[in-house]
Image (cartoon, rainbow, N blue to C red; front, side, top):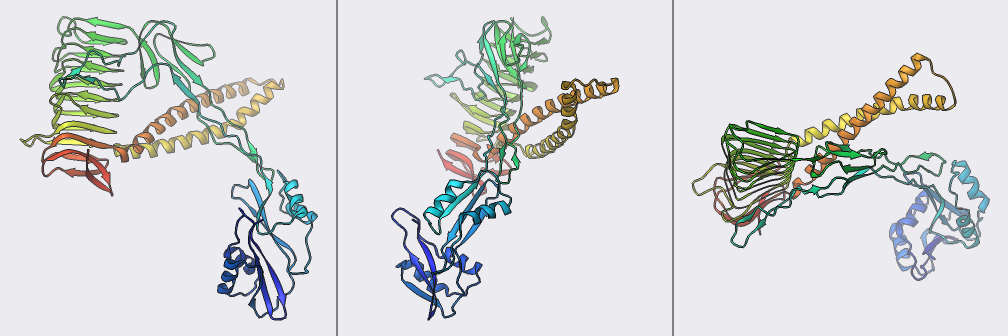
Length: 527
């Protein structure tokens, strides 16, 4: 039994008895008594009340010379903010005063229009054995069963943080990258786990409570794939390399070329491209899958839907450019513009503009970044940043400031789309119900219904697309605080390191350190 109190009216005035709790139960708190006294407008001395509660000896302690009128047994009912739980705390009467009965509580709940989940057993139990100053559940609503978002499960590796293996001599092993995922015809590529909309609940007033909205999605089938009739699974329609670009799953064939130059012209291929030799200046490769160049790339452009692997690197000559939907692995990057949704790995980066959606790793024997601008969402690591000659080097990590602006735009777009969907839903449901009941639609009604169905489909597709982008950008923004720049050897003066919207200019040689956000500024920390 919890600790409780009882008011006593004596010839000397009004007193209080405080009873200690039984073992393992809750002790009475001073505020519990004060709330009761304030509710009944009884003047009291806080010091005396607190002392009586603290000692809890069961003696009568006079706290007021005023004799109050007898107070019947009473209770305080509380309803939770979500209207799913009703509790009551009962207080004893002054000695000899009137007791309440079970019928009074039942009537009180009815008066308050509380009609769902009433705990009659709890009410009966109290009147069978009164326990005061203890919270008792009088009613509890029927809980909502929350659902979950739809999800596409991929049955192949999707790694946007790929790193090649370092050999013992410090060189990079470009032959065993494991970036390309080969599949055979008929292989299972993806499974759709549909959304679960959950089940509504009911609060203590009998009002239905809807579960949270869930997101729908679907499998986006690309070339050389086979989507099942129920659209729940996707299989490879041919053997080749599986890739994902903007959510679309494709299986690409491989085009093998000796060299890219005057003899071939520009290469535009929906599958993957493998170049045994070199890619000459002024030429381009556009591939829907991977691009693997075993020779050198000079002043050329490469655009791949998936990964790009350059075994000898790129000298962009100020005009070369690489864009990858996945990762980029190369021996060196010089005077080029390079961008990847995934990670970028190179042994050196010189006087280039490099941007990664995840991380940039500059490792190997030299492992330096000198000149130009290198940015990544999560992490940049290198042995050396800048140079003793003071090359203008800018290192940026963390979400782009424009991400916040884009998030607000998407949030507004999602709200508008949801509102439009909600506005046409009742009409659609009404028409559907009429058709199920056998009603025939006029040509005008049929045309209107078809327009509504088409609009509903377009709005749902837009909602899915915007929501997926919103979630991706939110993840990018959340990673800003964890973003870091790692220097395994030296960072030279003049190097500018930015994390999110904060920056630091290196003024003296920094060794074996990492740049992080701490106390609202860019700080140095030891490795």
